[in-house]
Length: 122
Image (cartoon, rainbow, N blue to C red; front, side):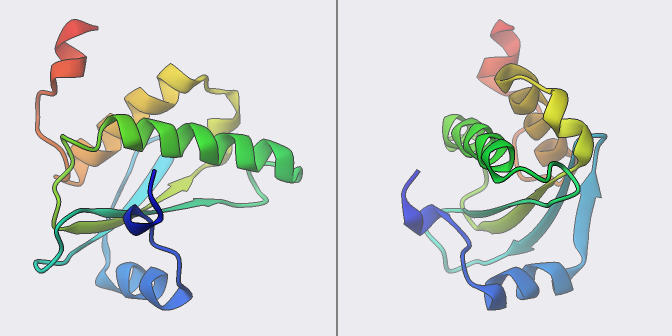
């Protein structure tokens, strides 16, 4: 995923957190902020040390999350910035389960259409 699609700065993370639009499921917490002037969405990914003390494991989870969001990029609302925070239970999930959980939490946050083409085929 291109860097233009990522929330990187601490200031941007804080803006999204302070908007207080959040929703969660068992494995992820999603904070969102609408930005009307954008051409595409931006995502920030956070996997804390509570998930795993090992950086290798945390980075592997981030890669799986990033890949899942990239595969869903056409269904995600383009005017939104959002942050996905992984919970400790994420460590036990495979790539497909991570993607399904991301779809669920993005639907709860109204960032994705109710029925995606990918879900209909599964």
